[in-house]
Length: 351
Image (cartoon, rainbow, N blue to C red; front, side, top):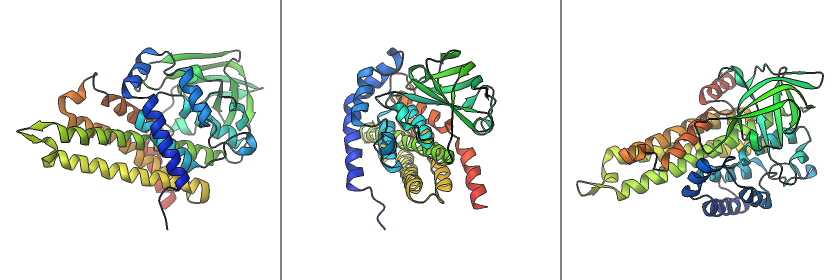
């Protein structure tokens, strides 16, 4: 059995790598994170729209590209490798839910979306299943926190009590969006307050698959974060000398780099398996997706942390770019279910 990417998928990967490397060198990532109010520019977003990335996995009959989860995961990994500050990931999440409801066309013409999932005051476990926001008489009441890129979104998909999904226009009356400080400066988070906001309830028999796909795409981005951090650590270990020898020749450093390679490679394999299962083996998809998100969540935060140790004192400074990867990995680990939550799902499936 061939587990490699197809020729088309390799082309997508190389195109994404070249595009993102040109548009998001780490100096530009730093500038966007610190200077741009929304964290991105219209020109950067328009280029992604011209590539067809926002509607990549939206079915063709809904106006999208109709590609699979593997293709989306390939690009997501490159987004993580570049640590790109972009609302593409949040738009993908909204697009998955909208497409499941047959409404993928809502994000046509370069519109941006996001998903408001986590209720104010919720715990790590309840944030994914138990929602306090109410949808009554066509209106939403409550608050959502840690909503990515809400301030720049055109539409929001809001989760409500009873596992309901409600579409809200960003211009709706009663909707309040407040930017908040976030661990990851390359991704803007907001608190969304819903004071009788009018919305349209979405209906689907396939919410589960959509949420699994969102988790897998987030895991794929964490793989890219780990890959970039590992490469930075290896390059530094070859260049930095101590006692007239590259520090990479010392076992304490070389073993750390080997462990980074093991975790990054393992996470990539798990993510590609899950992405393939979502497209071709729906029975295996829930288990595969939770394995991928749990493994990649750990790799996405542990590998940059280990890379920081390899860099020594300079790695702890604000001036070094490694902290952007460290924070992106930490933030991704907590989105759409952390490693512990998904390991519980694996245990339930296996036992």
